[in-house]
Image (cartoon, rainbow, N blue to C red; front, side, top):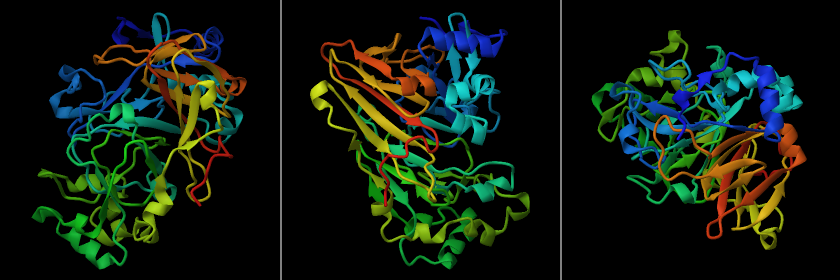
Length: 414
């Protein structure tokens, strides 16, 4: 099997090289797996990464518990590799960063509306896979992040059945704060940071996670994701603040609370609390407003395939991203039209996407190239992509996520 280490970063003209690749594949680009470690978390072992490679970046960097899809966003990790979090396009004998391809092709690849407004691919998705829960945290909004030259981060969750054969240690997520919680109560939790467990989860409530469903989460809302493997379409940013001091006996350093806070406010508890959207955190109808049930698109089951919205809705009247799950029966061929560019990942089965092979691997070595991830240009998406399930026994299932305002007819939460 060819490995990513066999491919050198191309020194050819990127624009010309990408145009040739898009023409060859009818608007599609093959992507290599992008693995990301987190030093403060324990891998959940459901990414299909070989057990010997869970600490491929080194024990000091932490275990690999994330795989990022169609990403042009750098992972905000300490001691990171230069290309950490960035997806590579795979050519015959070389590779090119998707980030560089977007910069070279612009609207030709991601569409005029996204390119003219953002001058980049402003979203990404990932698999998040941990053995237990992660610290209670929030993601700053655009205004707060702009103080450090960064961008805010809305995100979403979907729990794909194919990747969740086990729920691991805590398949529950804490969201927001119990209605009636006061800022003084939260202040005391942060004041007690170095005394052990600061007790912040006493102010929240957990929701049991359901495989095959999801959530939409705006910035500035506290949450502690549980241990289901999670597909996370999100904004292209890695800002966060951890508000919990101890998780499963593991200490969380204060620096992770103020990582994306202006240095003048690193000890300012009032400022740290005011980052939160208080009304959204104590919302008594939190599940009604944020929980996502899949919604079928059209009536196509008798044609051998089903397409579903799995991520939809708006954040502050804007649609930051959307996602769909496509299931194709054995032996079925169909043409799927979409409104914009997307990143695709195969969760089950084998088949074809135009002339590219699709294959969901059973086990992946750290440097292996796979046939389970593709980026589709806007032109190809609008023209229609031919999908074929070449199996005689197993469904072909793929997730695909889209950029901002691409799907105006998608369902909304309210």
